[in-house]
Length: 316
Image 1 (cartoon, rainbow, N blue to C red):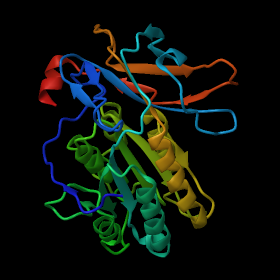
Image 2 (image 1 turned 60 degrees about the vertical axis):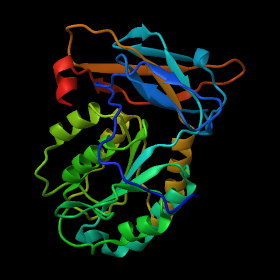
Image 3 (image 1 turned 90 degrees about the vertical axis):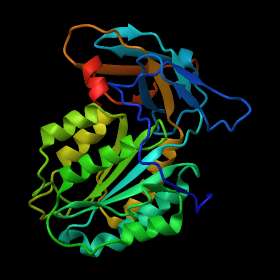
């Protein structure tokens, strides 16, 4: 990976599913296949789409014609499509509550495996949380691809206290908005449910629906943990189009992180312009895929998003 380049960008053009003002995804053949530009002229919903076969293998090489998109049950015209290994903005959100003390070394090692398996052009940040959420990187470095700096961020702090999970997610979503990559991802690792946040779950879910984030969650729960809440981790992953993992042993976390990195790098990008109407702001999305000589394809993407009004977009 091309380490050592700290990306310092406090104001980024975030592509938000409900608020993005984008129309043309232009691919410059003279540049790397990983680079692309979005020009802001109209609304566009961008979906981050994973396709697997019945055996769980990643399916590559599909074209726009292999997909169908529905919003609130109505078919949508796919106006943008990409199947390249596109760099993303990634947030690693890591639990450092007291119960994580014996697990921290495994978690840090697994997170570093994720970073090393990711696209070298990804911009990454770390959010550590226990009774409060805080940024792991130095204040002047919102994002970086420097492995040593990210390692230090992951080791930053001592596991202690309670679990402000919802506050950490809110902080991470805000940080994602400042990223310069148009695809956004969070990887959340926690061993318990929230027990001290000021943020509330309904507000967190609303903000997930208004973001472009795909969220992967890893729950490493103790059997006797009274605060564990795997349902929340599964819900965050499901509505955002990611995956939830509940490993039985710490040794599984490393392979899971490598699997997540591969999933991110093999996902398709599908865009369409939604209809503006006076219906409910929450829109429900379904994507299907099929191809000749292939068995049933399993598609995973976000299931809902919130359609913002023009005034809400301006406020955002």
